[in-house]
Length: 419
Image (cartoon, rainbow, N blue to C red; front, side):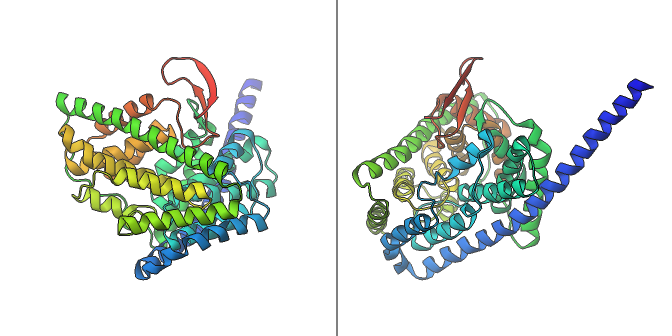
């Protein structure tokens, strides 16, 4: 009887913990989801205004200086962006609530004037800072605060991008490569689904995904072709990471004043936009993705998008990197894939997943992203392309605070930061 009583007490404790996390994560998902929906509408409105009034790109230098000024006024001139969210999960570092309104306003401003940046990376900061504050408000301990930050990340990503499973797994996978925070599985899923359902109820995500066309049939030839594309996408992901990090270093070395740096960076992006002859490479790149998957081929588009994004974010503009990464992968895939014998649109989809995997070091997330964006057909080929890109991209990564815990090549602990 004593043992039975202990088992019942243990089971009841688990049930209480489960119900507690379902409630906390669902409330967090709804709260973060509401802000993420407003953020989505703000970015969409800014993009529409820029499309209607192309002259707004001439405000790039002024907008860059204004963004840096806002961060200085708020005492966050040394803000590390998405890296701060990773540290908040790994080391339980507190995040300041003012990160949320700052990234909200400054990302919208970046999109309004035509800076090359995404939304989802900014959403990770937005959701993480809100959840971190909520965790302290309800008195959670250090370990539970980490889970709450992951819930905020998942909810914001899901509400914005419409991929709830991908969002939940990404929050658990991105912090430490080789280690998954499985204790956060139920909370992250609840937060992600809450944010997604709220966004859907408010009119977002009526049509999620991209029409990538007919995928290649599973065969020896397609396996070899996909492997080759995955290897090449690994190189593209390394290039993306290197250019992004180099841009930050060069800006800081040669233009030490942050305000001047942002203004000059804005002028460089403006000049590049005028040279390109269109605003196709401005903003996140969603329009370019749809054009490329729809049948267009621009072999140099991936190089231009990398350059636009590095010049924008390196100068101090705010926004995310995820959709620009997907755009780079799509541009490269739609050019290189057909040369290898793969269908055009399907190659773009493979490139999106594989380059995303290479820069984030998140193979499970990348396969799930493929499934949620392109459907379940040819998921084996998506998995193969992502796996090859993951292994061959080495220890490069978009986020410098990401920890590589286990080697990609051997079953050994290495515990180093992404390069």
